[in-house]
Image 1 (cartoon, helix red, strand yellow):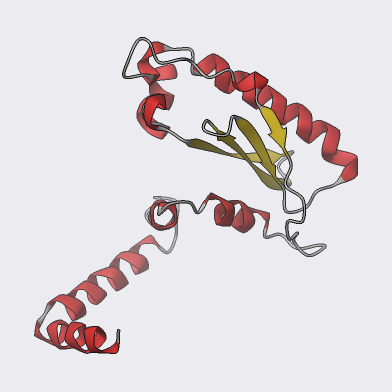
Image 2 (spheres, one colour):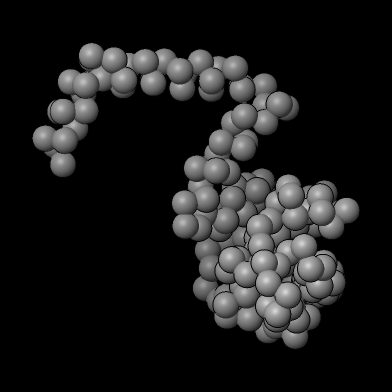
Length: 169
C-alpha cells in the first residue's frame, strides 16, 4: 500500500516542500490540510469554518498528521538513508485568520479547495486531471477543443497569430 501512495501521489520527501490533503467532512463539505515540511506546520484551510464541527475537524487534522508521519517512516520515500524523517505529529497546527469564506448555503467548497491547492504551477495539472478523468462526461468535448486549438495555433494561421501576440506584449 505504501508503494501505491508513493507511485501514485508523491515523490521523494527529500524533494517535497508541501503535501496537500483534501478532506471530505461527512460527505457534505471539503476542506484542505497542507503539510509544510519547510515551515514544519500543518495548515488547516476551511472555506466554511463551523464551530459545531470544529472539534471533529481538528481531530481529523491530527489523525491525518499522525498517519502521514507513520507513512513517511518508510524508506521508499527517501533518496538517502540519512534524511531525517519528518515528525509531522509535532508540527504546529496553523489556522490562518482572515480567510475569505464561502457564502451561506453555497456548495462551492470543492472549488475553494482546488483554489488553495494552486501552488507553483499545479493549477494546470489539476485542470488536466479533472478534464481527462474517465468519469468526466465532457472529456471528449475538451479533447476535441484542445485539438482544434492546437491546429489553429500551430499551422500557418497560428504563426500569424503568434506574431501578433508578440507585438502586443
